[in-house]
Every structure is written in structure tokens, then in C-alpha cells.
Amino acid sequence: MAALLSKSLKLHRLLLPCPRQSQLYPPLFSFSTSLPSPPPPPTATAAAASQSQESGRGIFSKFLLFLPGAITFGLGTWQLFRRQEKIEMLDYRKKRLEMEPIRWNELSSLGHDLGSLEFRKVVCEGDFDESKSIYVGPRSRSISGVTENGYYVITPLIPRGSDSESVQLPILVNRGWVPRDWRNKNIKETEKLEKDLQSKAADTGANGRSAWWKFWSRKSTISEAEEHMVAPVGVIGVIRGSEKPSIFVPANDPNSGQWFYVDIPMIARTSGLPDNAIYIEDINADANATNPYPVPKDVNSLIRYSVMPQDHLNYTITWYSLSAAVTFMAVKRIKAKNIRL
Image (tube, rainbow, N blue to C red; front, side):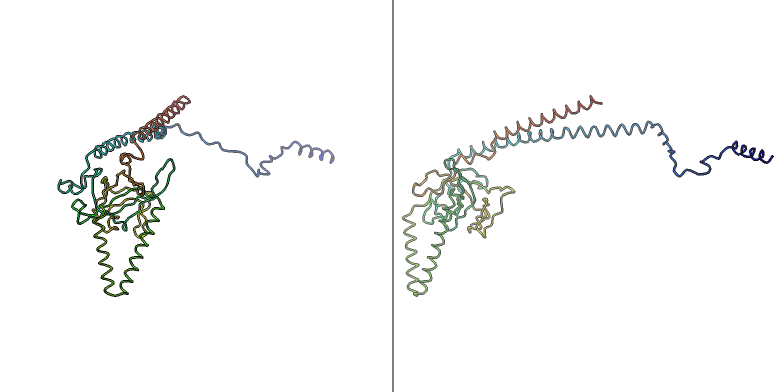
């Protein structure tokens, strides 16, 4: 009987349901993920705003594509205007240079405005004051295909009191181009002359009053004799104004004798002349074989620019061609984008 009861209990245990594992031992990790809820359908206002943003970006991108073509087209148009300005200025200079030269002493009697006489030829006489020469440079000159650096020498032309044909007031004359060696040689000669004069003055002061009187009286006699014997210097020049330097040209330094461009008021003050002194460029082509320097300016150089009208026309063609090329590329790019869409 006991054995039968034991077997029935075992059978009852086997037939009872087992508890779920999830209830006895809760899972350490959960692999269930919650899916996001689908977005609500866009409203008509949101769709319109999104479409306007896309169209705005499209217009801006198209503008950027056509911007290089517009810039190059503007540069080409500016070259056309600049070419026309150069043609008018060259015609003006040619007409002025073709006029008959004016004698310098006749300018005041004719009532000319000196400020409006630029590029007019003038004839004047006087004596050069070599001690106040100023060298502007460096300036290059091509000789038989070889470029040589040098300077423009500007010297005051001083009136001769005994000559009615001489200039009445000092003027500045650009005598032309000189090589570097010529400038150095002239500076050494000027320094030597100043030393000789200082030594003579010291000697006469040591010898007494009579020696001082003899020295200055002899000097005066020689200068008067030379003035009658030596003919005044004749200059055929063209009235010019100050140069306009570029941003790459250094500033003039009168204290150290460094002159990089022609500044008439500054040069006049350094030479002891009034600021409104007249400045002319010598164009007399009569060169002296014994003294070839300074070399006067060629009159044809006064009607030339570093960039001539033909150069501006070439630049115009280049800019317009570049504008057409980049505009064609922009149109092709937009068409390809529309086809993909």
C-alpha cells in the first residue's frame, strides 16, 4: 500500500505544469526595441516653405555660376573705356607738340596760363647750376638691345642778368638720361671743387686782408669775363608736370639724395626755388660728340604709354573670350543638372 502511494505522488508531480523561466528568473537584457512612430503628413504650409528654400538655393547656386562671367565681362568693358581715354589723350598730346615753340620770355606777355601749357614746346636760355643737380632714378635705357640703368638729371636753369633773352626766373630742366658712372663722376668733381674753394678761402684768411681782396676781385673778374665769353645754354623743351608714382615706388628722401620720381614742388624746395617753379624736359636732339651725356628725351616717348590703345584692345578680346567660355560652362552645368532631376 505504501509503495502504491509513493508511485502515485511521483506521477502527480510529473503531471503538474512547470513554472515559466521568465517568471522565476527575469531576463537581464531586453532585446525588444520600440519602433518610432511615423511622422505626421506634411501640411501645405510646410511643403511650400521647403519648396521655397530649395528654389532659393537653386537661384543662389545659379548666380554663383554666372558670377565669373559677369566679372570678366565687366573687366573687358572697362578696357574699352580705358582704350578710348588713351586715344583722346594721345591725340591731345600730338596736337600740342605739333604747335610752334614759344619763347619763354614771351609767355607772360601773351597772357598764357602756365598751368595749361603742359606738352607745349618752349625755347629758353640761361646757365645751368650744376651744383644743384638732382638725379632721379634708377631709370633704364635700351642701347642696341642692351638695357643699361642710369638716372635722369634735373638741373636749375639760372637767369643771366646781362642777357635780355635769358629766362627771367629759374626753372627746372630735365636734361635727360645719364649712366651711373656719370653721376658718380660728377658728384666727385663737385665735392673736389667745394674742397678747393674751402682751402682757398682758408688760405686767403690766413694771408690777410689784401690776399682776401685779391682773391675775390680775381674771382669776380673771371666770372664776368666768362659770362661774356661763354654763350648761354639754349634749351628746347616741353612743359611737364609731376609724376604719379605707383604704390610700389618708394618715397623720395631729399636728405639722403634718394629721388625715385619727379615731384616738382619737393625738387624746387631742395634746389632753393619756389614751389611753383616750371619744369620742362629737354628734347633737343643735337648731341655733342665730345660730351654725349645727358641724353635728351625723345619727343616720341612723350606720346607713348606703357600700355597703348592696341594693348587695351587685346585685353578686351581676352576678357570677353574668357567671359563667353565660363558662361557657356555655367549654362551647360545647369542643363545637365535639370536633366538629372
